[in-house]
Image (tube, rainbow, N blue to C red; front, side):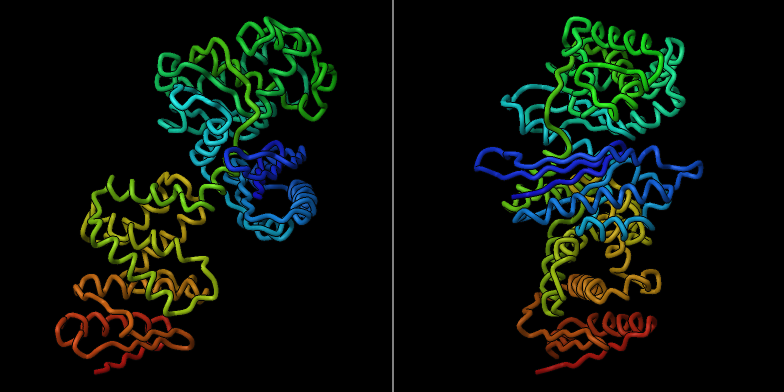
Length: 485
């Protein structure tokens, strides 16, 4: 049983699902119309009121989660948390309120998870499809075939900012609606050729906004009843007739949804016009379902982050033999250091695989290039925090340690850095390690025991160890070595 929590710019949502062997059945859902995206002040910070409302919602979600025997929980935050300047300050309180780590995911990762959720709900494995998700703070376009994603892009336009920009006072008229549509079209015109109709057979709308629009069209007998431009224009004209968001009275539309429907409708019309979409199919699947399936994949050892790392290695022509040796050795040495938990085990492995990708830029300072590439790359399956930690490991694998001095206060992370540095040292010295003959500890100081013949057979080891002792001494950590045999 898994839980997915989506901290969106318009709503916070929760899904609890059980995998039954072939599909994931949703057994509990919850939604809070928090409208976090509307809680950004003029400087881009979340206001005190917005944060308080979010914390209250997260506490309610915590109460729901605590009543189920969950195998895994994943909480993801999207656009507003990506752009809020004080999100790092707010994050600890938010995590305490919900009781789980919160992952701020990139727009591209959001798109991939959305597509996973949609693809899991469709039977065809060969259908070429376009998926559109209009969220509170961003809009994602994903092109794929069956379960495979071919193109994903996130646009920084969503229902909340579009509504605030063009319908801030709630007034709705034809001129402002047309201006909102034209503004939205300008955001998609450069990307349009990639997503035009000749590249897909069916278009799906996965967000709550799109489903609410489709529901309003269907239940109120607008246009031809489908999610077509004709129907969208009919809904637009009906909203203009109401004249104000507070007067919107449509069968099946909740009051909290009516406040942002104008911005969402403007974006949907803009996308369909710009991409030449004649009709779109609303679908009851998206980000949360994608998160649930991602948890299921991880539980069955099919972590897509592994493939993402391998693809990145190939793209930048990393030496796989050296990378595999380093990653394996670093993991084994980390085990000898007895970390308190396994938080950094996978991240250390992936950092070991990627530590030399900076060589594709330059041999000089390649560890700095690798760190930058890892932190800023679009790596499928990874969160911003995970990439930042791997970046730190890559940066710290050679050279002085002052550049990551603050990170050394986390003893387990310091152990991961030590393990990777030693693994790289052994790799460069071409030592075929037998870890049964290695003793390694790191508490108040670092203690390393090696076989004397290794140093004799590989003269550079002595040089590397002396350099290593200097580096650790420079950050106040004693490093002693003992040679046996």
